[in-house]
Image (cartoon, rainbow, N blue to C red; front, side):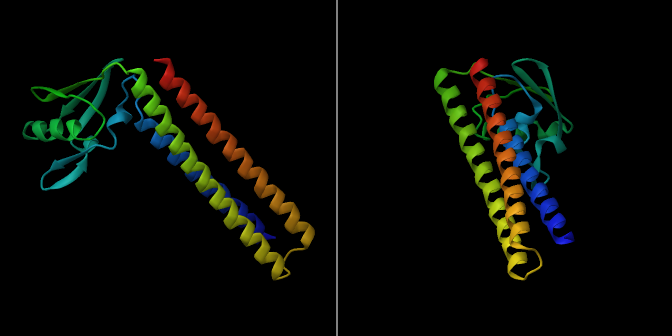
Length: 187
């Protein structure tokens, strides 16, 4: 029975990973309010290589619609400005000495719809990942039953347990999506 417990632990860990990945994806979708997480995916060309922006600067949010980036090395300011401008978020950074100010424009209804659609795609990818984990778990349980390590009744019970676990994670994904869509539409 240790195998069953190992399978359950592995499935839970992998489903948690899919949910955490979804949350990271959602943090990159801006809902009109400034957040340091918005600039996390930005890579800056620094010292001959690409580095995450948080390794060359300090990111702060002094106002609801403003992000400031305090660049540590004055020679990196232009690289940081270029990286933010080219990251595909539609931001227009403004250098001011060693500080780069990044004002967030007000979202249009069209842009909100695009963001909601992108959030839906991220949620569907997370659902697919959770279902893939479920499939792997079911195959492992069937394999144990075929090797006669568990009975058919145990196989049915554990298959039901895996399905309930999957349903719980799908529900959490749907709740996270509903919350993000509300956040996008609210601003």
